[in-house]
Image (cartoon, rainbow, N blue to C red):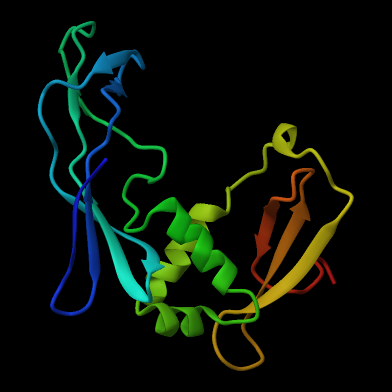
Length: 183
């Protein structure tokens, strides 16, 4: 639910929200618990630009207490559109990944006014360390692309992708270089 929005003096759009979810998952026993213990610290996340303005979603996650665990631990609510410890929404991470097509990490960093490490972090969050082959429904089309990690002609990574049945592109691997192993 949107609480309010404002444009700051430096022309950023801030959107303040509150989760409508009333439950969380206990970090110990994994049971569903009610969120009646207040709110956590404010979290500010970079989101997709709106009207060509840097946009941030700001919220305070709800907190629940597990009455089934012996120590009754408190758990902070996790929302589906944000990975913990990420400074971005998942939609923004996906957007940054698309911006890397025919661009360098440095180029995307400059265009989006974020740090180099923020782009690398988005890339790392979007690429799973291992592939769950049960989730892959189609290997008919495989793409092999390269991205320049820095300007110049010597520092590349190879991106291996596949197009799934419903049209979603799935990253299978990011290789450190474009050379064959063992040659």
